[in-house]
Amino acid sequence: MTKKKVLNVLFSVLLFGGLWGILEATLGSLLHMHFIPNTMFLASSTIMVPIAYFLMGACYKRTGTFASSIYMAILAGAIKLIACLAFGMAINPVYYILMEGAFMGIALLIIRPKNIISFAGLGTMIIANTLYLGVSTFIRVNPAYATASQVIDNFEKYTFMINCVAILYTFAAGALIFGAMRLAEKYNWNFDKVKKVIYHPAFASGCAALALVLTMVIR
Image 1 (cartoon, rainbow, N blue to C red):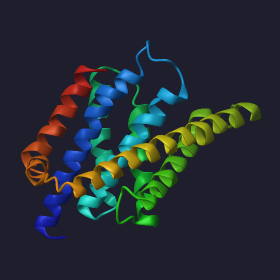
Image 2: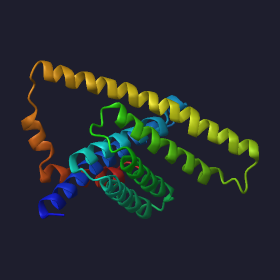
Image 3: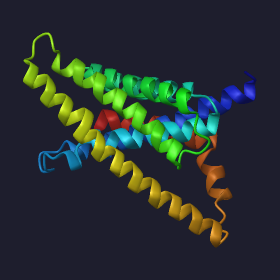
């Protein structure tokens, strides 16, 4: 891998991993507030996880390597771990973040979508999310100590119901983004200057730093 390629992967991971951390610290924390209804339609698993997969997909498209999703998860997990250790919190979220990155990497390796906003991209998310929810539910329930009905109920809730809601949200968001992209093409909107700022190393590094600060402040 050339130096240019390495730097592209590094700053892409900092950018999209930082954005992931910022959204987890803000929107993710909001979804866990007591005044938010406890429903699968407003659960972190149906909103934040698909967002994380989209960002990992965007990083994959930018870098061309499926391992970028794993690097992103390591970055996001490290930021979360620092906050957990600093405030004496359980580090369980770190494991789940790393699992998200690993399963997205596997899904990207299987499908290798050319475009994230596509049916191939949606299929990648479905594979990653199904694997993630299935394995995380297995770990959470622990069939060795749970009854058969508890295992079935949890798998039905997370692997099927919550997974279906997440897929519907992803499809709807993808359709909106696709429509916006076509509208931009129709009217020849140029975002080159915006992209130049977003993909600048300083901006990417700033996103990662802001993610760490917000994670430490909003807990």
